[in-house]
Length: 201
Image 1 (cartoon, rainbow, N blue to C red):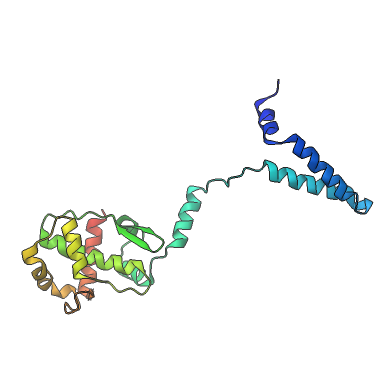
Image 2 (image 1 turned 120 degrees about the vertical axis):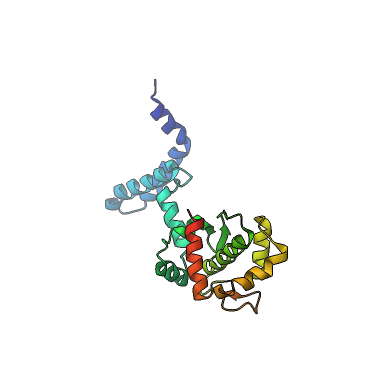
């Protein structure tokens, strides 16, 4: 009785096809000089058998290979790395705050404070970080409207005091004149580093 291993090998080879291929190889090598025939036959047969028996699908990449590929696809922009180093925040913290694939980022952090004014400022600072992470050369800035949407989705929106909260914390921003591009001041970046440590726990 055949062992399972032999049975699997036999099932993977079409012997009629193999016989035809061997005949074709013999016909081909007989046209060559006699001193090359034996070696040429072996090489061609070996090539055919490997091609037929090799699995059709490539092996699954290892976890390490997947991780390396992901790292190659996304590089933290230099300005963000400089910011992280300045405030002693480990680079891997970015992965706790955002899901990143190629050039796309999605927030995965949770705002834990129940005070709406505090939550709003935290969301503004983290939105500025997200923008800086997305593309090399992006500034630490945010759109007030995007922060409004974030506040609404996280149920921390205070309609009556939304704009006032920014004015009350104006030292964190270079200017509030352009609501589409509110850039963090040095004090704002210091505050952002503290928020990162709170939210990424």
